Length: 212
Image (cartoon, rainbow, N blue to C red):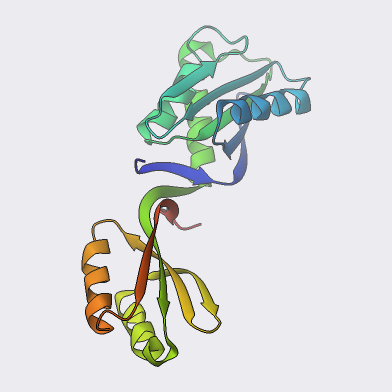
């Protein structure tokens, strides 16, 4: 597992230059099939548009990268769209830019700038997150330890994924990888070894990088 940047959800923007309308659709996806299905859905929605250009990057290592000019001159649409995603270090993302031609040609340079700007405008309204790796642990404790334990969690601002109150109290905690060892030592010392700790493995958590 690697840490990387992506977006949450789905977004839309629109702008116009020289009477050509550029509609940008951006979505978080996790597989190439999802990306292709999204592209197909936009093409179906805007079947009357001259061009539905696209780009996507998939994978923890951005191992899948593809783009399409969809009828625009080669290298003037899909490639600059993909480049914007790469410059922003984003993965698990697909973007489709639909162009309704307004009768005035933009030229190769104009198209490159227009399609790149369309993606940038879409990202400007998107919630960008960092997929960070946390270690997940289940902790079981008796009620007499609850007060001091919860105070410690509050002081350390530890993420609590779940709580369960029955004969004993169970907490599921998400600990940053670089802090896990020290926090578990603190908990063991705090409880004199009376808290049962079970490691559940690593999980991804989305940490917002920009506020919308």
